[in-house]
Length: 139
View 1 (spheres, rainbow, N blue to C red):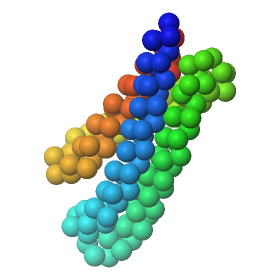
View 2 (view 1 turned 180 degrees about the vertical axis):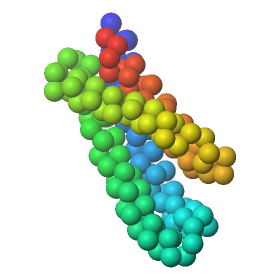
View 3 (view 1 turned 90 degrees about the vertical axis):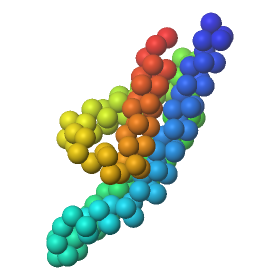
View 4 (view 1 turned 90 degrees about the horizontal axis):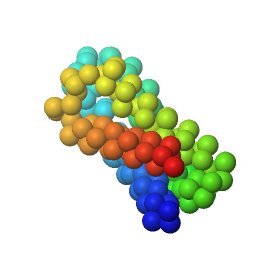
């Protein structure tokens, strides 16, 4: 039982670290969004579309960072049975698990081949989602 508990804590903390990496990758990819928009649209459309796209990208990247710390912090408490921590890691797990589903449903694969940071971000999201679901819901 102790080995299983320490594995769950490690998985939850590892998922927290991966969320941190995902947030950093998201922020590192932000300048590429502006370039992608400029190359794909007219100059007038790029001036109109770039600010909200950059805002959205930065917002998500910044919000992933505290989410990663909350996951790592709650990990040992969730495994030991604290209800506040179990709720926290389960809500985070379900939220993160919804991301790849929504991502693939809305975007399909048309952006993947030319965007290695996008592929990395999508892969990290899937890995984090599976890890969090397994660690948060399996007793």
